[in-house]
Length: 95
Image 1 (cartoon, rainbow, N blue to C red):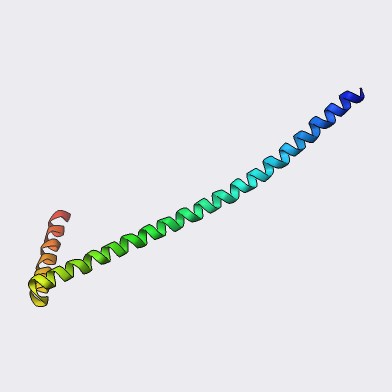
Image 2 (cartoon, rainbow, N blue to C red; image 1 turned 135 degrees about the vertical axis):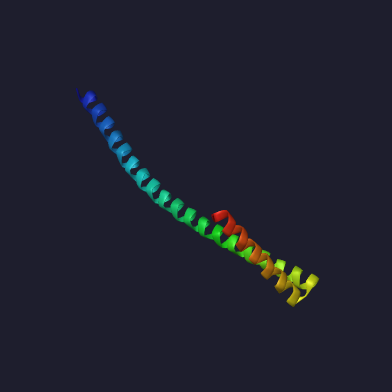
């Protein structure tokens, strides 16, 4: 009987330890999931910022090429013409 009681007590102790460990791991899992979510948001923000910077770089590079090839005034005039053409295309497509 004493052996059986000792075995039952040992099993109860191990089960309690497993429950505690499970609760601890669930807490760690929750914390790690929150950290993952925060890092994913940061990645998304940085990706957006990178895209904005790429667009800015493209615009600057394009402006420099146009300026070096055509000069400031002629380049500005051509860009204005292109913008007008794009606006017309958008108007036609929206009808």
